[in-house]
Image 1 (tube, one colour):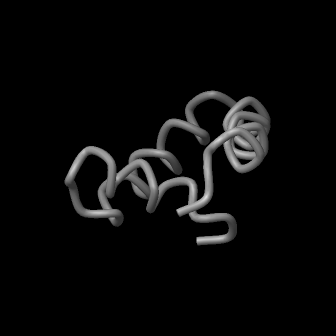
Image 2 (tube, one colour):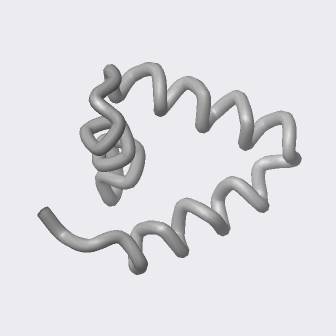
Length: 50
């Protein structure tokens, strides 16, 4: 919800944004948070604006 990365991915694939957000949090926790946070920051800059 900060930069719209998960919402944008959900919109692209046509799924509920909540599922993407929950999946992202679970994946981040299982990968010791920092790699997931780094990927989110990179995607926030790389993804095109709406």
